[in-house]
Length: 254
Ligand code: MG
Image (cartoon, rainbow, N blue to C red):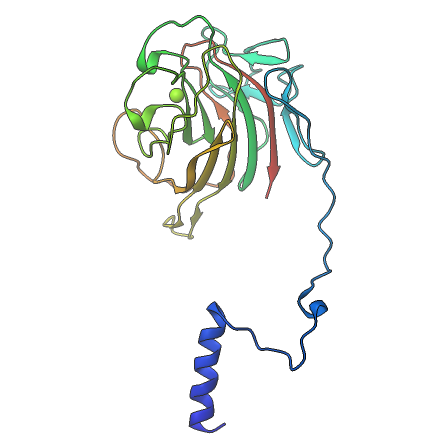
């Protein structure tokens, strides 16, 4: 190949990344159709926000179906989870502590519904506080943030003490709400250096509140994130002393 041809190949190749594909000499409507593979069929769940919520699609792992806590254990010692189960919901029980899934995950789509107590008790962080920890480490805040001011990076939909939600889409206390989460786990090299952070996208009641947000590290109450390498991890739910309820918890691994 002559130098000029090389240069041309390089230029068209580089441009091709962003723009042009090699054009076939003759184009038809069919030449841009892709038929294989065929996306597999998933039967979507049913949606009834006020009544039964959004049920799991056919290919999801159901983490809580409203009946029992068989898929959950106490985060403290791995013993049976002791939250209350009633009316298709599980509720933080006094002194029961955090609970987490037995199964561990990396990248996933997570659906989870929550409800702050209808009887409003406390203010700020003391009102309907719970949390959903990705891989047991990174907290997506659950709080009753309906007419309840607190620090913005600690309200509902925040990555706790890091990234505030884009908007406040909270419903009134006592009403069921939902988070739809798309999460990708961080990548570490063999020396434990973080090559890529965890990323999270969150819809709160169908409204985007976190848009491919990079999580900086763990989400402690005091201090800045200190990154530690880890592998797969559970979904952990926080006992913050408020009787917050959850239902329709399901996950699709990616
Ligand atoms: Mg919390």
